[in-house]
Image (cartoon, rainbow, N blue to C red; front, side, top):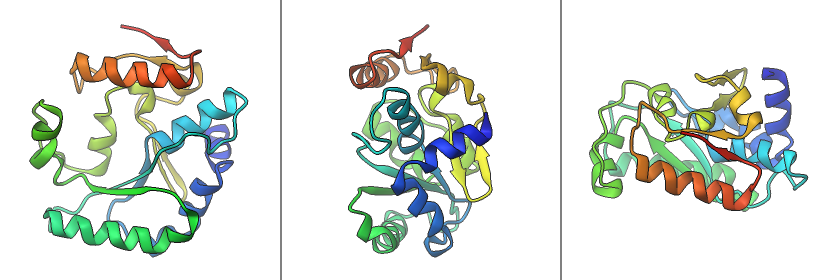
Length: 181
């Protein structure tokens, strides 16, 4: 399953380019995460182009030595420079500072993370808890849920209203997805 997943996400030319330029990004504890991965798989399963309707490419990293907004902006600018020719939206997010802004943005508390993997673990939907970097895949809930298209709430982030909005937005684009409880 891991080989299939990696082959599928690399069918997205943007994912492939990001991984090829990984060392230039210089992200501490860095991972390419979320929608650009599982949405690529869902696009392929739906007979769409791998890159279809993917709004952004998320880069998570963990830098507790600089959890300032300015520090995160500098990493964002570096990522945009390295990937500028791809014509995609890239978002770099320091997981060491999520607890500082999450509640004001989403209206829910968020405990301080200890690593990038902690951030991946807390995505609203377990099937979407995936990350890759050269030579590694991180999928704490396995990859079967991604391929099965099963969307359930993540007990680590028990915000039902946020889950429902996210799951319905996915179902609007991939109607075959199943929303569970």
